[in-house]
Amino acid sequence: MATTVLPPVSHSSVFTSLPEHIQANQGRVAQPQLGWLRPTTVDTPLEEMRRRLDQDDYLYVKGLIPRSVALQMREHYFSQYAGTALLDPTKPFVDGIFNPSEPASAHKGIGGGSTEGEDLQRLRGAHTTPNYLTFLKTPQLRQMVRDLMGWDEEVLLQRTMLRHNVPGGESTGVHYDKLFLRGGDAFFLTAWVAIGDIKPMGGGLIYLENSTKLGQAIEDDFTRRAEHFTPEEKISAFNANMTSIGILSNHPQEFEEAHRHIAERAGLAGMEYKWLIANYEAGDVVFHHPCSVHASCSNEDPEGRIRLSTDLRFYDRKDWDAGTCDERWMKVWDIGDGL
Image (cartoon, rainbow, N blue to C red; front, side, top):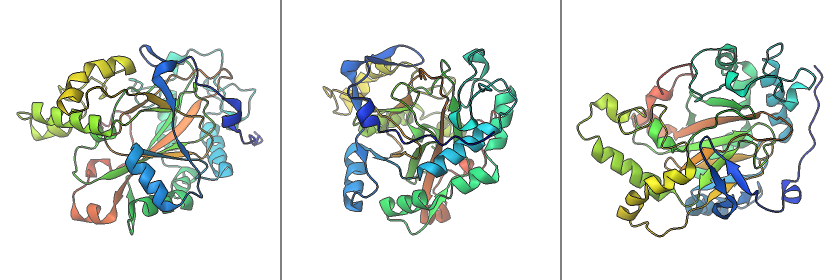
């Protein structure tokens, strides 16, 4: 199928106000509790980028990966679903439009609770194609990681997470990444990459404002309550302190209520947290800290566009060589791998 190159979208001119609400797996977040992620241009001075990452707990870099590169990756990914029920067969692969005759429940991706199905089998293979592995080496992305962290060399964990979320499907619940990488003490940096345009209600990541201290307080509380766990239970994201799918909550507002006592104990009482959203474009990258609390909203794209992204985790080569990283993640994602 021929490539249709999507034109750049100036989201700032398309969306002048916050949506009335965003939907989650359970419940919704109303407009008064919403805000915008602060965008950073690629020509912003490095010291300012570092300051924003430290101050905001995230750095949202617009167009870090060239748009053409991101869209080529999107086309390649969906071309692997040719002839399946996932896609609208009348649309180009690069558009990634969900088949309107299909139920969303039949197309669960990573974290959707399913361990079988044609989508997942193809998703497994998509993680090892030469096109995807080349995409992970995009020079602008890798150089930015080194520059931000001041590392001589970065190590990308092999367990990356390509995610496609269909309209009406299940989204990613509230969590922070350290939950899943407790097998090492070293700092790691997450990069979330938008592989296509994602409108504010299109299923993109949402971040709880100024939440890293809260995330660390929750993790400290887990550590205290896991004192008598086995070593394996202590590092698992699926232990007795967690939900069955390793998240903190499926309901963003209930998450805040349920963890208010921890916030108070950590001296964070009275803070007015907002959930920050964005108008993502192909090639945008958000970097965030291990304890930054985030989720994804439900995909309610009016055009039926499937959200496609990948989650990447980087360590400093020095920490990796010192054996202080979570080595469990140095393997390619697989269905039901327990991580």
